[in-house]
Image (cartoon, rainbow, N blue to C red):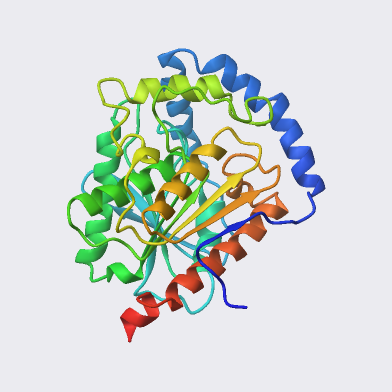
Amino acid sequence: MPYQIDQDVCPGYPLSWQARALTGLMRGTVKPASTLLLRHPLAITAAARLGELATRVPLRPPAHVEVVPHRFAACGGEWVRAGRELDESAVVLYFHGGGYFSGSPATHRPVTWRLSVAARRPVLALDYRQGPVHPLAESLSDALDAYACLLERGHDPAGVVFAGDSAGGHLTLAALLALRDRGLPPPAAAICLSPWADLTDAPRRANRRQDPILPAGRVRWLARRWTSGLDPNDPLVSPVLGDYTGLPPLMIVTGSTEVLRDEGRRVALRARDAGVPVTYEEWRRMPHAFAVLADVLPEARLLFRHMARFLDAVRHAPGGESSAAA
């Protein structure tokens, strides 16, 4: 049966022992630490600096993966290539997560090299500017500049895919909306992993106790920090409130017990209401942005097969990459 892009999927894989052990460990360590530390601006500054130190000892990908640094006008990034017979005319532009204050292309290599294999194309992981030094507008500017750079290098928009996790999912959606509003050509598709899409001051009631990583109150506190002086109801600030008319097909992935689950659901519904085909996948008891844990989590590795099927379906859909190439 052909893959249908517009569908809801709840994968029925048995929960692995690794998932049970890891979520239990995070519930007892990561979540309490976040609850305790994310209460003062100095905590963000300290976490950002620790993240900078971590990039100096990056996660080393397998030997067959090629990582090449790349420099933009205001930021940097890296090209990641893995797998055989990659289509060099196509590319995935990847935006890492980390709450807009931590994370880097280096910390997300478990995602980017596997995504290169799944998409059969190079991945450009962007090291966009982040808080607390840089505001959301500069992160968005870096994303749009990177896309413009790809087009200047000769990439056809029909061969470009956006992808991102958590805050990177927010940046993915904001970039799509900004391109549409400016009358610029969109990429062929986008993949959002546990997108942080609502930065309004609305409380998060779903999965407050079940989420093994994110404390809902701290997510709300962080949103207040990043939206200070901004209109949180602006769709470029809270993409969950956006009009998705004219956007390309989306794949949105969430975990059933994470506090950001409902934001992903709401984006999927708004996009479908605007005529955008959406693959919405809700994975049972998976933690926030679980693709990052692919080195240890079997379910995360399976997720990349789902991404590959989605991208294949986009490629062969009427008006997709294959049609554009013809």
